[in-house]
Amino acid sequence: MSWYLLNNPEKVISPSLLFYKDRIESNIRSMVSIAGSPERLVPHVKTHKCPEIVEKQLSAGISKFKCATIAEAEMVAGAGAPWVLIAYQLVGPNIDRLFALRAKFPNTTFASLIDNEQTAALLNEASTSRELRSTVFLDVNNGMNRTGHATDESLLSLYRYVSSLEGLVFGGVHIYDGHIRNPEFSERKAAADEAYEKVLPLLDRIETECGYEPMIIVGGSPSFTVHTLRPDVYLSPGTNVLWDWGYGDRFDGQPFEHAALILTRVVSKPTPGIVTIDLGHKAISAENPIENRLRLLNLPEYTLLGQSEEHGVLQVGTDAWEAIQIGDVFYALPHHICPTVALHDFATVIEDGNIVGEWKITARSRRITI
Image (cartoon, rainbow, N blue to C red; front, side):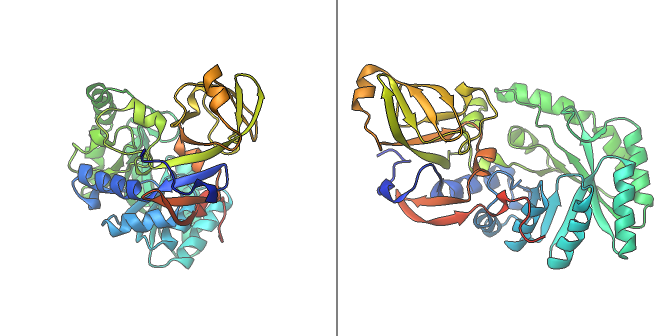
């Protein structure tokens, strides 16, 4: 029997997100094994947004986590994590929400990112007005050009500025290289090494000035297996815990298992050769071209012609069209799992082909209580 098939699919509404518990646990073990120690891991929670998975990572010895939103930070702290980096620059009301978060979870250390003096000054003012200090990481742009300070001498000036502010505590350096996606490991390693080496002289200068080795959090899922070779850095894979078609097909050398699918059903056969399923772009990530949205594991030959909000239209051969019945169940592997998870309120949890529970996707909301 194929690993993904449910013994009782009739108990699952469609479309529904499925989490395969054993595979999630296996992926967490693989993350720890590759890193060499759970202490080196700072996994990103944006992929799953789910406290039960955080609890499993905590049980594996992981104590540090990364997130992108205040809601994700609240979810992680609520699950018992002692240390959380909000890998985002906080502006506007989110600065006040950070302090509300700290008040609600006094046993959790929170940090956030800074890549410019203006943001540093705003956070410093908010901190000193409360007679508190806030931990910050310098966000460094080594080629992705999304956020982060440039790798030039002015990065050292930003470090000095942050260190001069009484309301801020320098926690370390954050370097995300999500732009490096070479499929073959040696090419991916060469690109990641070249990008990382741009930062090294400035890291050395910062270390000399502060008098200790700063905490360096580097990479993401694509470069995870590259940066494990740097013994003095912390690693922040995210997608690895669920894995998806996009990363699974692209990157060699990553021994992770697909652990999340969408269950969908046939709702119509409007004309010969056309089958419609209840899997529109409100249930699976649709930011990629139509050919890179989903892979149906139990339908070998088809073409996804289009999607609307609640429908997916497939073209199939004559024999397949005649064999497929209204209500038939298909299992869809998402091309991009992170935004797919965020479209669902809960995941149906599967173990040995059986439904064993539901896990709420708690942090899919932009606000939980704070």
